[in-house]
Amino acid sequence: MRVGAARAVAVEWVREEMRRDPSTGGAFFSGSTVDLPDDAVLPSWSDVDVLLVRDAPAAKVGKFVHRGVLLEVSALTWAELGSPEDVLGSWVFAPMFRTDTVIADPSGRLAAVRERVAAGFADPAWVRRRCAGVRRRIEDGLARLDERASLAEQVLAWVFPTSVLAVLPAVAGLRDPTVRRRYVRAREVLAAHGFGDRYEELLASLDGGGVGPGRVREHLAGLAVAFDEAARVARTPFPFRADLSAGRPVVLDGSAELVAAGAHREAMFWVVVTYARCHAVLAADAPGRERVLRPAFEAAVADLQVVSAADRRRRAAALLGSLPRWQAVADAVAERAVAG
Image 1 (cartoon, rainbow, N blue to C red):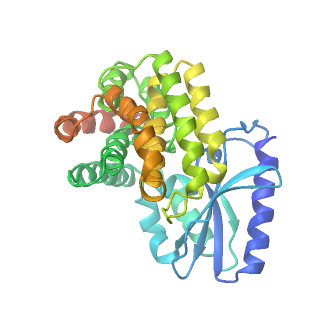
Image 2 (image 1 turned 90 degrees about the vertical axis):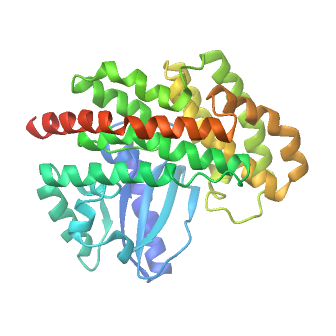
């Protein structure tokens, strides 16, 4: 299916949702499809991300198939989105509005955001502000590692802020910082701006130096078992639970595609994230099965060389110590991107 046709399905769903729920005041596209033209082919493992804007908080809808298209629908409030200047300074939201991503906007508030972001997106002051937000996310996240939590929770608390380092070059380079493919995006941006030789250091901050493709395929096979089991037993309302019902192609097929393309080390980010999420579900809803499947999860964590809490503290400290060097890279990337 072409991206344009998939977007049309998403637009149709949003219109139906707004008729059912008048509290939804607007909607816009986000995620990896924002950068794609209408005539691009949407891979079977990709979803179309939609954000609904409401007056009051609402639960994430999650992933589901609608008329043959995998949608991922989340919700936020107008307060969470903020003013046009808030959005322009946000590394999360600003990339979504630099092009016309608005699906529905009866009040015109999203149009005002879009106009402000489009006009100021490449302004160096706003690029610096967005990069500063990325750095704060890394620092705040790695400062909150809790050794009393379960292994799954500890791994998630470490791997997400660690991976945000890959977001820094993308934000500096005026690119959309995608989630699952964030390391691939970082590699592209660094290479495009003359810093390709720094990518190995960035990737090693995730995996400690390398995991071979055969080993990653083994982890994918183990993850498939854990994923199917977690999807079968999930009852506890984790924020990501809905992703287990329809997200299998995104995780497994999308990761297999990365491995086949030679990006097996990059694939380990989302493999380990999903593994940890599955084990959080299993520990809550099927603890016996979690114990049986845990060795395979532990093996994936071991291949990132973060077996113990001490390992994770050491790696967090090393990454935090590297931030001034990465800030210099981001500053140079931003200068070239804005100029060019």
